[in-house]
Image (cartoon, rainbow, N blue to C red; front, side, top):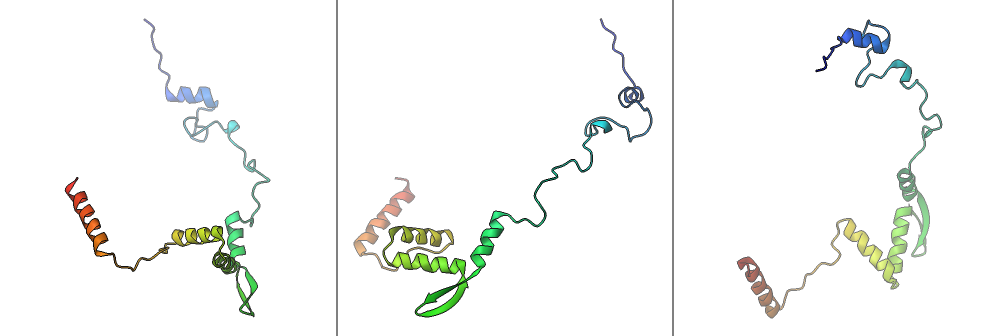
Length: 140
């Protein structure tokens, strides 16, 4: 049988750090030796410059920038976003299928109901729907 030898903490520290005193030379979990730690200022010197903006900021700035449009023979200043919606709307009313689909997608995305149904159902249709709901509730 092999006899185990226990080292005391002070001896262990002395063998690792060289100096047996103080906590400043402590080595362990989350405390690497000083000579292997990163030196200050050795990060990414050519990193993102201060004041640079991301793509989202640039897009929002462009969308809010004013532009002049002519509407009904009169010039108006509106945001780029509003002008783009006016163009999309005009293309939709001229029969552009893609513009119509895009406009409807935008309306759905921003919480507006696309089609509102105000028509009352025929009595026959209402009867069919009532029978269907009744079957669903009974578990058929």
